[in-house]
Image (cartoon, rainbow, N blue to C red):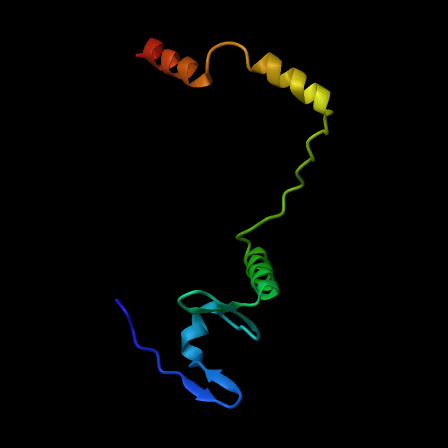
Length: 106
């Protein structure tokens, strides 16, 4: 479904009706990219992250999101990683083990 958009060309540039970008929220700056078949207008990259951060903060204040103190996984050397990959990569695929377990429990 195509919808006709009325724009106005002025000496300042092309004026686009604000309701078209209302879904983006409070956008102060946009980026414009010239494609082969169209001109793409989108919120400036930094603003997207700023809006995301604002939404997360509002969700935290409402008690919907909580920061959990996750411990960072220990760093391992490439040699140890290779050793573990070799050791754990032996044997049958996990999918086969799961299917066999399901058959036994029936």
